[in-house]
Length: 109
Length: 115
Image (spheres, each protein chain N blue to C red):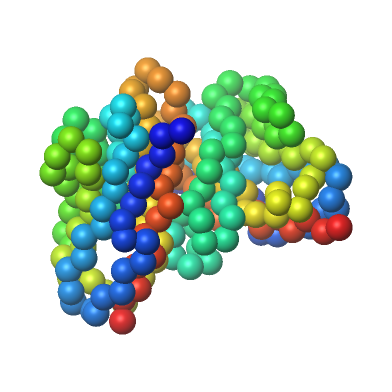
């Protein structure tokens, strides 16, 4: 079976740094993705990890530890427009993504 | 920048009716997907399609669902006899070749409302 856990909600202040955690238990693993989803819109790709370590893309970084079944998404210099849901998703070895329930991030002034 | 497109953006139908949701994947992509998201819930995989056939499907994708690539550009999802619980946002996605980047690009979605 597939199980992906993320916190349901988080709140952070504009300009700050926030870390969104994701733990997973899947029958296989071919990579972990982070997507951003604004309400009523499609998920948009943020980052992808297949090997352990940190991947950095501008204000966004994602970390993976395969042995721990753990990833996090780090958002720096938060902006109001970063208020959205952040979805952790795993390629389990099959040709599709399994998504977590998402973390709704609210950025406050 | 190329993008996945979907039509219609919103479809209202009566229970028991057939609906066809349409998608145009990114032109050089070879893998195509349908996902759904019931309001307030997570994105759920329905089906993947490669080389003109289904490569994988989930438990949700029962006999009421079918997919087709009728020409070189469109990718459709048909629900034969809609149920109230089929009300959801349906997303089409595509990605490049097996050896290329794995990220899937999502279309804007079709909101299906079954009454």
